[in-house]
Length: 124
Length: 220
Ligand SMILES: [Zn+2]
Image (cartoon, rainbow over all chains, first blue to last red; front, side, top):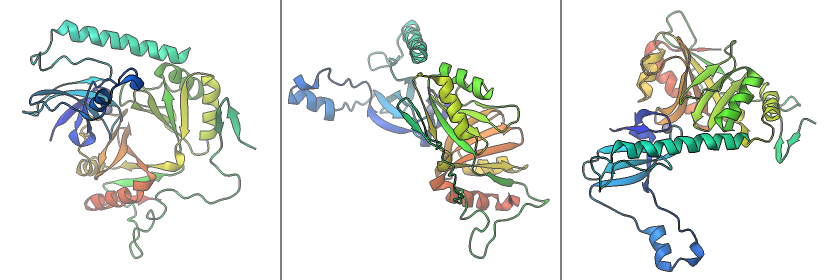
């Protein structure tokens, strides 16, 4: 049984509360109308299946019901990090020990500012 | 006519004016768990006391924390819990606001108040971007008290309900008896469960079964 850190609830919760939703960071083509069949097919159907570090989309289905990302090792099942939507991973196949801290921190600062701006936008 | 339209939103009072009987989600099993078995009553040896707080007003609030906080403080005098898993009560303890997710809160008020509270919140929120949904008919609240209440929870959920992890003022949505519910700790000696209508009967029977060894009693 795993305990997974939900970045929104901000605590470790039982694996049972979560559901995996496949590969993370898949960008929808900007203009689907101009995609070739091959490009559109790759977007819809083709997924990486690496042995090793993989970024995945998960949902805290029986908690806050928010989607978030997990960097996971598909060979050892080790979870290296969880992070919110819109943030970038610190661990990757290129950086299995993690990128320098200032990179991750910078991403978080941008995200924090974005969230506050979003709330103020709501207020306006 | 009690229907009022706010911009594009039509609201209506879910309490019918005519005397149409309402039934709580637990009405079938609450008094009689089977034809021959009445629900156990509370006595001096009851290690757990269960009481349904039926027909409360449950409102789901969605939107930005800042605007909702302002409106809820104005209307009810409660600060919106900004931290994840927070639960805040007013002075009487009858009204509460709980964090559900970063843009979603559950507001529970005494039954019959919900329509007026919803209207006052809509007035306070003006043209902000938000949603209020009356979920009163979809769920019910059950309170558990007694020295064995925590033991009963430990049998039913994987969530760590030790006071070090689950202090007063915390509320979580968790797996419970293979189903799910909202688990709240509004006071030192009381837990609250928010059950969805479709699972209420099953969960009630589970709780009675799990509480049998502690002499669970149902307060009527
Ligand atoms: Zn969560």
